[in-house]
Image (cartoon, rainbow, N blue to C red; front, side, top):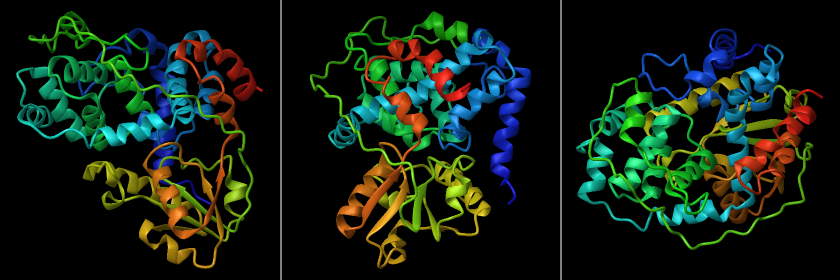
Length: 380
């Protein structure tokens, strides 16, 4: 079987970064030099978020080239995505409440000006343009953007998080929603992030010197409490003859022997009629390319519209599904299973389950366990 081009592109991009720029990452990663100079960061997040690149495999390959102390900051950044997923898996109601919240707010002129990039803050307007055109923002810039949205423009954080999901190629329910909550002061209660003019000036290399930013602001208050949800039933093995997977976990190398044994693999990309948060055309097209690349690898694979799933599964009482994590894909599956009566057998990854047990508290607690995680999952 040939390896599809999108996987080869991701592999080449990661190898180039590891061989050329990763040793400068810790020193330069916070600088946003503009869209034409991005070699100070990896540019891999759009592949990692869809598991074209598998996080644990990425770290393994990196540590085969460099000692951990030389690349520790990059390794931590990769683990942030794993941590965010685990944190949300333990508190799924946070995602449910976020979806409910975004329907509570009505559009107004201030919101529309922000969405159109027509505020009195030049850097913010430029970032709106960059987000819509290139579907990417530097990570530090995302923090500034969210802070200005919440504390200077006084707009609901939920609508900002929705805006990012609509336009980011690497957007996912966990890292996006929880990062916005962190800026707002909800993840670490009472501790919000406030963008400063000097900080933006320094880390944009004097490209922007914004005025009129909020000098001080209290964290957003939300009195909702979320109890930790525990799931002790994780399956890792094939049970049924048919499999479903979505675009946010397309890694196949560790499951190739399982995939080829299925009678049929159905690859699904929800369109905007099946989503609560509609994605931009660019984002949907990117996701289509990813699933088409996966589909090319397996003769028993078929890309289908979710509306056709019930017809395809006629006569099935149960089906295997690559677990898609908290988000719109899982929401769709829950409704589909309820409406159709077809039982879902989720296939998890042992690496994820191992890491999620460290995701009940803040990232500092998770970070303390990274050496153990590396020893157990990556260097073993």
